[in-house]
Image (cartoon, rainbow over all chains, first blue to last red):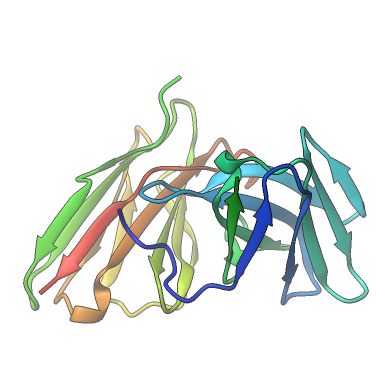
Length: 113
Length: 112
């Protein structure tokens, strides 16, 4: 399959553990943030989003935290499963940037049984 | 409902040639964006079209161009291909705003 990123930082976790993936974003004017999951051979898949007027949002097994003071996003995955193994990207939408997204470099999550 | 469809799935071209990639958005979506993904540079924004008008453009040379048709389908063209243009080209669509953005599976372009 295609390689998404040959030299991405990797987070290795045991099945059932919680995972935390971090991301620093670049533009203090960004007002919308998204986490994507990308599996080999596929396009990025939406996981969860958050607007800049919030600092936390929860979904099914996932939570996103936003710290605007230090321009930091994190994605927490509860009870990580082998199917969660993929590359995870954060993306920011600059205010006034229409539908332009600026992506982070990505983190590879490896889940071991 | 059908997702974002990109064709072809794989493409091999020779340096100096040109290439056209196609993207069919989700039915009803009017915004189509294109991204280039490489191992070295990651995901980079190329351009966005909305109702046949380019609304935003990334920092790519003029060899990269696109257009959107009245049915919202979009094409991107790369002229005078270089080895460095080898990448996965991704298309994403949404109704209007960036929330609801859905990506296709991409076209893998290899320039030899």
